[in-house]
Image (tube, rainbow, N blue to C red; front, side, top):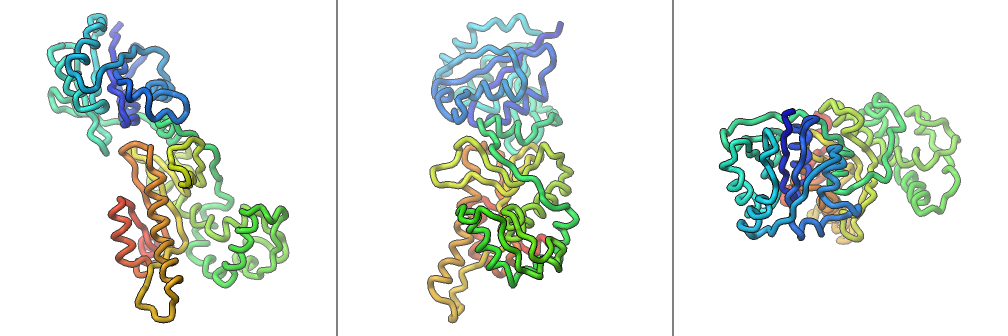
Length: 368
């Protein structure tokens, strides 16, 4: 029996350890987790340690565990020396995680062991690099969106399902949205009543425009989901279908209308995501806005309050997109998708988003 040992250094880069284990393990693999007191006490959103989360996602039933002093090369080597490595045919060491001192100490410890292979996963890549011969292994294991979130102690409390077909949603983007511009203000009032729980019944439908877009017959009442769809939910579903098709994502890799259960976000920061998906082992989130207006100070007919509010919409969206990513690891990407034009967003808004590492897709990008 070719028994091998997979060694993982624990740190905030949880998903890199998950990627390595899923790619390299076999039915004879055993596991060694190297951590510190500090690491064991932090980031426990769900009552589980990082080690326990990795074991759960990777379906590991066994595993040795050693606590070391993160700033002591001597201590790290001493603790590792207590383990009998002679029983293994091969030792696969992943030094992507841990502190710098831990990486140095572990690499030095295993350098002279002919059974050991030392690996590293460059951040933002899907390859495992062998540090001894500089060869690389392409990662092709499966990490679903739920796997990724579980790795960081996060659960999905709620998610939405598209209420209309992809074909209808595309038609909404191409044509139907124009029909609703005259009644959007009234629709949004109904939406706020639903959200404030002041309207427990379905909303009265008095809009002939809904007949024009074949959404619901005139005088047929509208429920909360339908109101949400008409006032912007359709755009979230449009983006969802767009990304799903662009990357050929299966349902397990992309979700829309996601509310996370555990608190990686700061107090007061929303924990809702319009679209969330995993592609190339990277977590991506998209904040969808049908309209983001720039602060055009040159417009004389606007009040100072109106100008400030227009700028605030973009600022708040950037802040939310950035804040929502806190606690999701280093391989994350945030986007803002909007039906506003680049001119409406303004150069200031685009530059501000870039400062916060937020990518923006405008109407022109979506129509291209």
